[in-house]
Length: 251
Image 1 (cartoon, rainbow, N blue to C red):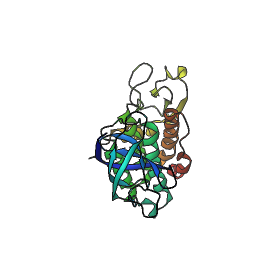
Image 2: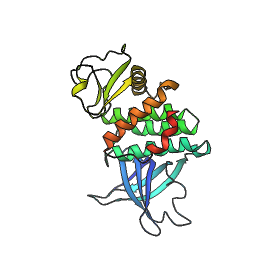
Image 3: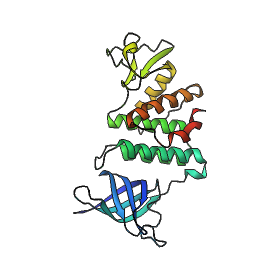
Image 4: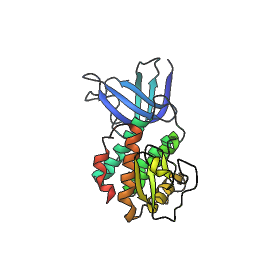
């Protein structure tokens, strides 16, 4: 049962006893972990503000075997998420990013790049970047890292390139992407979306950490959110709790 030290972002906290918490963290080197933080609910907690939701902290934890929760022994705050000072929408978008992380990832399964994208998204929301762009960028990069990115250039049925000169394109949320006119009639859960929306989704899925010049045209905001809600609900197999609070992203 070695002691491990890593950077972490707080995804969730749940009371465990009168004085302790169970915290779910996304960590730099160990993926998602859940650990008991003894004494975290006391007025003079040894963890202070390091376990506030969305905070980034340096943590030390004792790994346990089997289904036993790890034991958090130390946490030092590095950065506090402050977007609530800008308004409720950036705060909800931050909550949405950590909810996606919690729901879509498996315990103790590190994903290369996830910490970078999650940190960048929270910082962008803190610094006043357009919430619609920051959120869509994170959602599609998350799906890419998980190997769940919808096909946005080739038909999911026959593999032919999609004709983006047409005014609209069929998107099947259960089939995994766009479909050509010949294949779309046999697909399930088909949405008819504009080619502008497809291009926006393509661009958001292709940006890198060093290339963040991405924005959503006003005319595409509503439809891109509509499409992403369907895709994410399909993948999570349940309605995500924060999605109803993101309606403003459609405007």
